[in-house]
Length: 67
Image 1 (cartoon, rainbow, N blue to C red):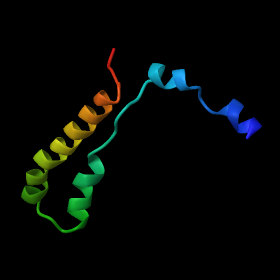
Image 2 (cartoon, helix red, strand yellow; image 1 turned 90 degrees about the vertical axis):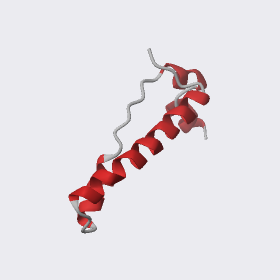
Image 3 (cartoon, rainbow, N blue to C red; image 1 turned 120 degrees about the horizontal axis):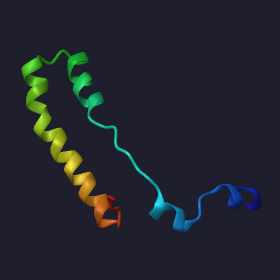
Image 4 (cartoon, rainbow, N blue to C red; image 1 turned 180 degrees about the vertical axis):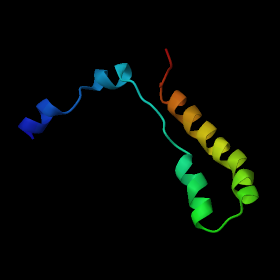
């Protein structure tokens, strides 16, 4: 416990951290690997964006902010 306590970020560090999002491309390429047509993959984009919006709103609700 002692050595890990020193290695882990402190509670205050999370509010000052920079978080990036790199999501969605796996959802799109998975559709192609599942033999979906290009039109079917394109049709899935609104759903992917809705999921992204939901996650961003959740993070904002947890006090995540942009600068």
